[in-house]
Image 1: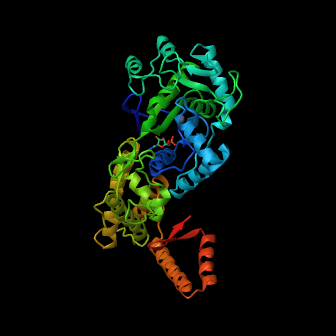
Image 2: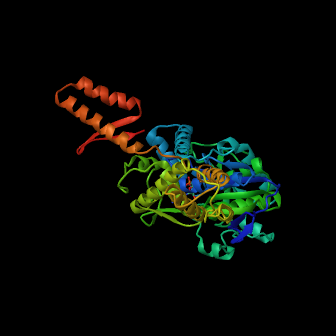
Image 3: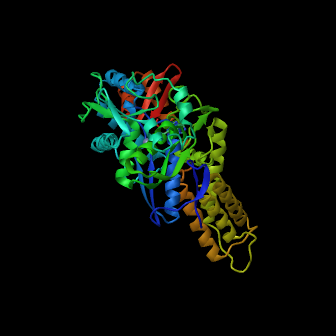
Length: 488
Ligand code: AMP
Ligand code: ZN
């Protein structure tokens, strides 16, 4: 079985050859922890969780590193995010690391809800300042970077003069880049507008700052990933992933930094996950077209008619290939729910099938299994894999109806293969039947009892109901249209 991976660098599907046989080093750019992750972010992390699970299922020993951006991105050379961070800090009167902690905890909670496996190493940018200063110094020493007014910039023109090619990943031509960019943020410090910050001088208002040979400042976002991936995976490693929007400039800069530092390409296979859109518009905080993962799960939002179990969301995401744009809408979620429930019903039904060793079946388990693995190893094609799983579902229901037959050995194999695909590789989880509906009904009864208590002025009881529910993480909210609840 040969695994093929679409490499964004070559724009081709290539046969995967790990550097060390049987082992995979994989780095994925993590979240910026200055606000809650939205569902679009979750899609990217979920795509790589599926890839991680598949690699392990195929027998690879994987070291999966996914960082936490708690410094660099907030302090990129554009300073935009940094300003936002400063404002929010004042607004909420929180320490920067308190914000970082709050949203890191939220990030872990959200990913856990969707059954994502934790990476093997989750390094933070603030925990690797020393490594970033060392890399910056190395780039200055080798002539790839220069200091300017307390900041240090990567010299893109110098990089290209030495026969290297800035723009190789995003297929951008450096001359065009120079022609089309105006230097709005370098304040004249840069030699060229395309030069990017490795280290940035901190203004007096800047809260996150460290001492360096160039004065007090903070590291550039691109450098943190180079520092951490090199530290934990080596100067050259197998797979680097992230969302499509990180190709340029972030990953382009990582390639330049890696090549300039070590004289070799840092990554063999660049993988980019495509975007999540909602009602045909890209999900993004800045446009307001976004939904927080919890809002989809509780149903507390203006976009969907009902709530959806996290496993149904996961199933919906995996019904699209990681390189395709995925649009979610109310109809798409309802269709996914139907498919998911049928798949889970088949898993249940399979346990009650009685084998028959005397009759031959039309269904070839060997061929079916091969088709599933072909899909999985063809650049992690989850929608095709799921389509094949539904062939097995059809067979299982035919077995249940007595229209098909299966031998004892095949039954065991079908059970173990199906379970492995559904639970280990796709990472789906069973949903307790009507669990959500039952909880909803129960809470409505409690809300009604509280209303009655209030009407009869029994405030002790009504407050007790509210407080006890709150202690269990269920918050009642009194609004103009009555009382609703939020699961915290
Ligand atoms: P950020 O915290 O902004 O650095 O984003 C974390 C990850 O989410 C990155 O890999 C982004 O590429 C990815 N991302 C951002 N928006 C979307 C979206 N609408 N769909 C899928 N992935 C996204
Ligand atoms: Zn990164």
